[in-house]
Length: 102
Image 1 (cartoon, rainbow, N blue to C red):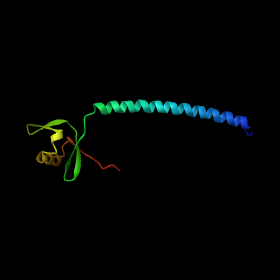
Image 2 (cartoon, rainbow, N blue to C red):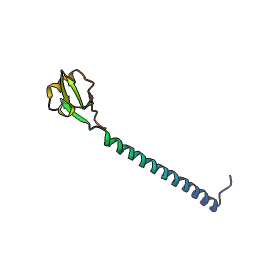
Image 3 (cartoon, one colour):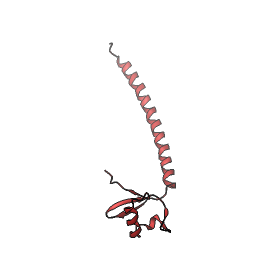
Image 4 (cartoon, rainbow, N blue to C red):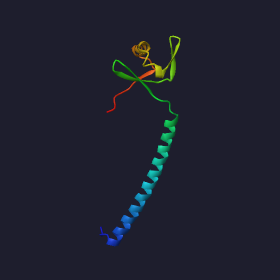
């Protein structure tokens, strides 16, 4: 294989550099679009409600629900220990166990 001349090396590296700059610009634009979509999604997403029962955290998956004929809002569940204990014991689908982040 013939060795490249310094001019050929420079030309090849300049072409590679231009390609990488273009890819970087495209990636930056994609990141900007995704950040905008994320901000929009976060703006309309309901606030997460986390409750604790016996040192285990659960996310309440519905903003409000009925329990034994009583309407309960997720934000009020932590204060209602009896209902919270019943939901945990029944393994209610209204609660999702929050796993510790690693």
